[in-house]
Length: 87
Image 1 (spheres, rainbow, N blue to C red):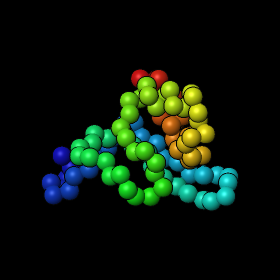
Image 2 (tube, rainbow, N blue to C red):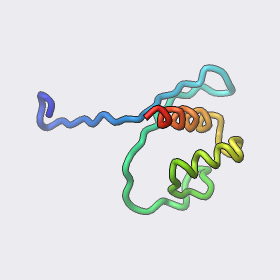
Image 3 (tube, helix red, strand yellow):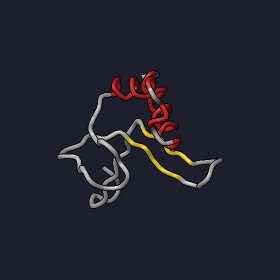
Image 4 (cartoon, rainbow, N blue to C red):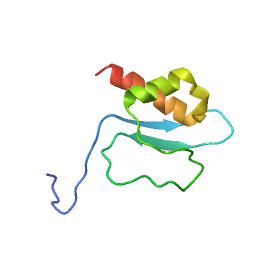
């Protein structure tokens, strides 16, 4: 509990923040690991075939065809997979 009981903050691990340093656009973002509830939305941005997968499935997808992920997502996935190997 913090100093102000009406204000709550959760710090989670693992996490990763990124910033593009070269490329066609400038972007900053954050990846985080979380627990989820509910159903996935099937419509939205340019997402194709949204679904929940295990870490091992993610590793396999990256090994089989890393170009199926965007440049930014590939970097985040590689960062995450290296992080969990150290646990």
